Figure: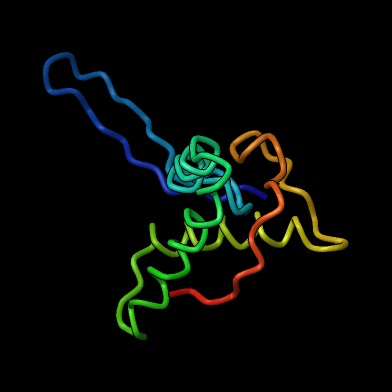
Length: 113
């Protein structure tokens, strides 16, 4: 199954159209925002990876029940998928748009502050 949110932009100079896909499937990394987020996770030093993930959850909680921006939600979903993959029996993240390596062992802290 494939779902998508796309933007078609027509260049006024030559009339050519560009097709920009924002979401191409239903997985946690199958959209532009989550794919870009995976680069932040990969690029973070090992000792900061947990903070990158924690920051996404902190941002969601910080809305206090108000409007939750889709990009914020998507990053939190991607973070949850990475954490779930670390759990016993967790499904590994195998998409080509997510991090290629599993997360390292993360600190045991549970608070989101």
